[in-house]
Every structure is written in structure tokens, then in C-alpha cells.
Length: 141
Ligand SMILES: [Fe+2]
Image 1 (cartoon, helix red, strand yellow):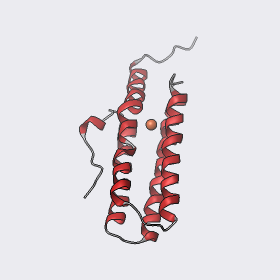
Image 2 (cartoon, protein in one colour):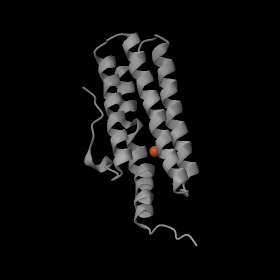
Image 3 (cartoon, helix red, strand yellow):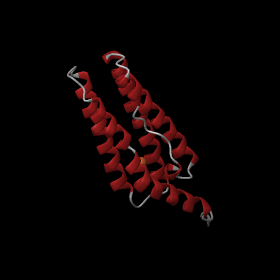
């Protein structure tokens, strides 16, 4: 069964981000299960809604962090978030249309949907958060 599993290279070192990513991976796997076990469109649609809602929540949290530290690459990172959400919304529209689903193709897409984002931009964001934490607090005059 195709699954998106946590691997240690996904570890960013940010408790907030890693916790969210683990939950997202869990939600992707729930969606896999509903698709592969043919549990019906209503279940699949709910799993898809849950995934989209939590993804939006998580991206919002990362974006707040970027704002907080005035992250220099925040524009590009936000654009990536918008793209990932758009992909999920498109997938949901396809699943909701009730047509025949190419399960292996959707599973391939989902298993690679978030991983490259984590391995590139999220790792950089986590490093910036870490660096910010180790800097001395600004002195008030
Ligand atoms: Fe991100």
C-alpha cells in the first residue's frame, strides 16, 4: 500500500513545524486509506477536507513565524504554500467530480506532495528560526 511515511531527513528541528508535519503526514495517510479501500466518496471527501483544513492551518502558523522573524525568503515560501494548497484543491475537485480515480497516480502525487517542500524551504525556515533564537535579545535604550 502506498504510504507517506516519516523519515528522519524530514526532521527540521522545530518542534512546532515537525509536529505539524507529522500530523499532515497522518492525514495524507488517512486519505490513502480511504482511496485504496474504496470507502466511498463521502469518506474520501471528508479526508480531503481535513487535509486541506490542516494544511491551511499549518501554513498559517509557518507564515506567522516568518513574519515574527521578518524572514527574508518569506515571499517565495508563501508562494510555495499557495501552490501546494492549489494542488490539493484541484485534487479535491477531481475526487468530488465522481469520475474514475487513478489510485496509483493520486498516491504517487500525494506521497511526493509535501516532501520536497519540507526538504528545501521548510528546512531553511527552521534554520532561520533557530538562528534567531540563539541571537541575543535586542537591547532597549
Ligand atoms: Fe512551509
